[in-house]
Length: 246
Ligand code: FPP
Image 1: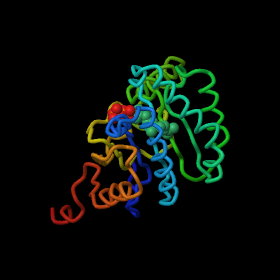
Image 2: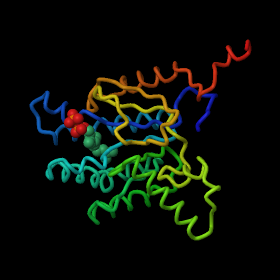
Image 3: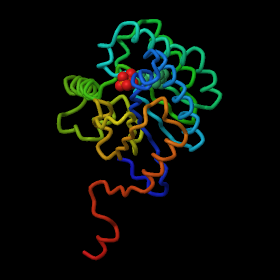
Image 4: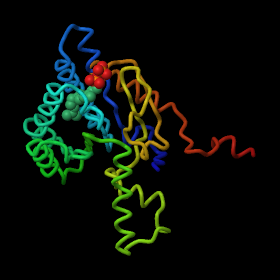
């Protein structure tokens, strides 16, 4: 649990970037153009996250369910991922950003996988923003793979079942070592987690906006941060002032 009390800037922001298709449709453009515009919004928000000294930015870029989209759209998204890894990675590296792709990478082509692994390797020592790009990610998948690893350690006699606690589970998730998200933003008016960070969002503040992802700009990001700063996070406890009188 993240209990950073000396700052009202979130340490970790997770974003479900939704609405690229609707943005394109409203303009009579192809869904591809929606994703391209979505990519431009990613650039703006990453830049702002660096400026605001956010520690971790997690972007849900491709869910396990997205494989059911038309092949051409999937291929286009794969090209965007490779483009980030091949053409934009130097710029991210120069800004001291550490990039990692989270999710079940085994379903991607070996070319895309190599691109993702190369980008991660190049930036792994960077100490600035940690940019987590969730691809073929599902919160249930993450928990299942964590349980499999734990079960294997128990089967080998390295651990006992009694040793399982919340900390141990967290240490086997793909987000091990990262603070949990303080704020989760979802664009386009949908108000669901859609199988993103299920475990990690136990105490996360949820922020939903009708703005479509390609329109999510600096002002929209500021509005989300402002709303977060005014929320009272209690982590299940009672408010400070009240507890003094009880
Ligand atoms: C959701 O909009 C968006 C996606 C499934 C893809 C998001 C990808 C990007 C913004 C570009 C790549 C990003 C990175 C970080 C490399 P939708 O298509 O579901 O929109 P709709 O709900 O309006 O149809």
